[in-house]
Image (cartoon, rainbow, N blue to C red; front, side):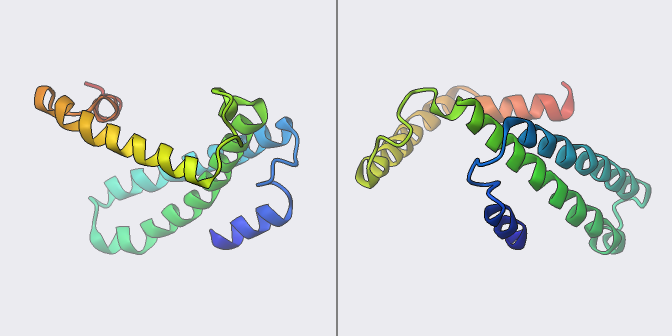
Length: 139
């Protein structure tokens, strides 16, 4: 993955030098085969009843190859969002110096540390975990 990142950087892909159409193609070229290989690997793991020998040997190959494609898809998606201007929604992109960025991060952490116990006193899960479980188990 490190080599992939180096290649994408040298080609100008991580610098947002390519067109929006290029990044859309990256999303398709990455996610379609990545998801197909992931589904095949998952089905085979179920067929082999999650045997450790299978999962650690043959199943790991599906994970490795599909992970490569999924990384391309996610990079394309993030760069596509960036090119569409979505990451500058609040208008603060590039306006904070390092100290101000550090203070924003610390403030967010403190806010999370204060709000998390309050939410977890009332609910079993936080909102994102609740949503993730609903999507995972369809319940």
